[in-house]
Amino acid sequence: MNTAIILAGGVGSRMNTDNIPKQYIQIKDRRIIDYCLITFQKHPLIDRIVIAADPIWVPMIDESLSRFQVDKFIGYSNPGITRQFSIFHALQLLEDNTQDTDMVIIHDAARPLVSPRLITECLSAAEHYDGVMPVLPVKDTLYRSKNKKEIFELLPREELFAGQAPESFRYGKYLECHYQMSKEEMMTINGSSEIAYKNHMNILLIPGEERNFKITTTEDLELLNMYLEKETIN
Image (cartoon, rainbow, N blue to C red):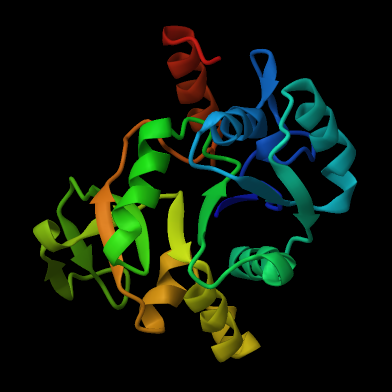
């Protein structure tokens, strides 16, 4: 059983969008969240979909679920005070009907151009691992500075990678990571695989995709428009 958890609880504070979170902005004939919803709905390896969202936006999402016939959807979970708490709430929603060896694949609603290939790789590559994370190589030379003024350390670029979503995990082990952490510890977690790594789960890195970017700024919206003008998304 493979369950997609789509995180749609962010508020998009870095974008001036009239108080509409970025994942609900309309682009072309769809909201941003709709693009990944359709991709996960159509993917043959995805059995169920859970959406973490603030209740105020549920009626809007319900419209999309009906319009695009998303019949794999099984429920909403409440957003948390951080992204990782939102994930935890979604994992808890699944406790009564999910096996420890089942897979969860976690994705940001604000990454609309996730490809079927990447979803397949995240799930199939996990056969001998506890989880899978797509990554991109770092292209620029990176420096570390303690005072933000002077170079303290040069970081080896060939050893550095930028993580993407979706990320997949063995449900039982991943859920247990959250129960093992205090609230204070979990507040410091930034990425889905970070908590897995800190709890000694074996995470495989696979090649990500440049087009699988996260909508964060108005420039990202412009880039998304450019992609959508070049390709037809059904």
